[in-house]
Image 1 (cartoon, rainbow, N blue to C red):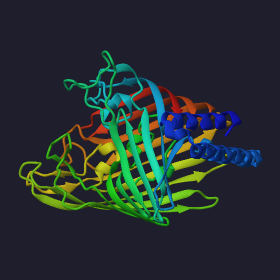
Image 2 (cartoon, rainbow, N blue to C red):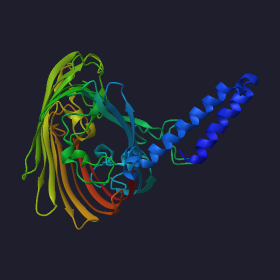
Image 3 (cartoon, rainbow, N blue to C red):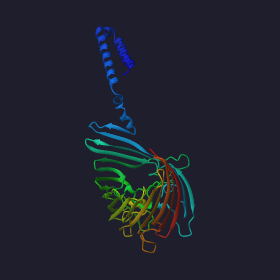
Image 4 (spheres, rainbow, N blue to C red):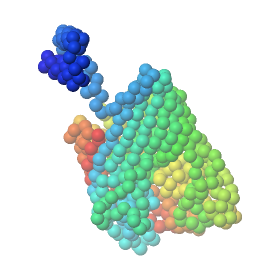
Amino acid sequence: MSPARSRFVVALIAAGCAMAGPAAADDDTAAVIADLKRRIEALEQQLAARPPAEASASAAPAAAAAPAVTASNGNGGDFKLAWGGYVKADAIISRYSDGPVAQGLGRDAFVPNSIAVAAPGAGNARTYNDLHAKETRLYLKGSGTVLGHKVGVNTEIDFIAGQLTQTLAGAPNEAVTNAYNPAFRLGYIDFDNFRIGQDWTTMQNMVALPDIIDLINWPSEGTVFGRQTMIRYTWGGLQLALENGETTVAQSGGNTFGVTNDNALPDFVWRYNYKTAHWGDYSLAGVARQLTDRGFVPGSNDSSLGWGLSLAGKIPLWGQDDLRFTVSGGDGIGRYLALNSVGDAVIDPAGKLHAIEIINGFLAWRHPWNDQWRSNLALSAYRANVGETGEGTLLGSGVTRIVRSVTANLLYSPIPKITFGAEYRYARRDTVGNLSGDMSRLQFSARYNF
């Protein structure tokens, strides 16, 4: 406390005593004021004697902790909250060889089933230009120790994941304001080795995430992809989870898959992560699940077993290059693969459920040119064992059978938090009824992480 401030405090006390009335002017009051003045002067001398580093020590932690809010839990531990995310703007030029595609998620990101298809020679090519910033993302995370337990929370939203179809009345559109509602992505609690809430499915290994600027990030048709509510236990490299169970089915001859909402059991998902010092990171994951329809397709009342496996990893190459990959397959795991391009099962005319076999995968090479420039090249493919017209298939002619794509980009980060990118993708889709179509897309992006 400075001398000027101490004199001000003494004067303020004296004024208060004077306002209290005549009794405040007696000798006892004067003695109290004199004693307070001596105490303040002693405190000033103690502060002046402290070294400069010691005097400023209490201010340093506050400056270092600026990005997060720390709250004491009252039991000798701390819980820290931090918020962040990124702002991203995209300019996308898409050409579809065989028909129109309505403005929506299929033009904002690579969704395999959005590729228009037609019979040979019957296509009508369309080109679209879409600019948006809907991928902008926000998160709030917290972690700490409470009564000796590790505790964490995470919530995340963006403005594209829950995008409504543009044909719905009142849906967001590009006519005037380009306003889009926030959509819930993640929200979970960590308690020691448990995670409870909505997260990326345990079947999906984020280590293999390619450096791609498309919203999906992964080559869509070649990846495991899903977020859902779960209870997950982690023990070293082993993860065991019970995740939300759901079944997607089509009726005999149908071209679309619907959600039955009939599952009585959760999906059991596991993954083992193996990290080496010099040979990369790898994982093997699996799922066992109930497939059931109790009347979503009229006349159906049947259940079956679905299962699948997924091998993923990141392999270091020369310099800073690496190779990232995922290969997955199984029977009745359609909703886990390629954005549910083909569902889990089809219902035959007798009401019996038939699981659909699917295999997919991708390979992505990442090459840094220097500290600011880098490129990525990705190959991806998907195949559903749904047969072809004339081979006794139970599915309609428009159901996806094969998808494949190639993606190449060039990314520039002038500073660590900002990335500008240009990306080209070519993809082709074939269906059960020998309909086909392709998409060529050029995407430009600017992103700032905070």
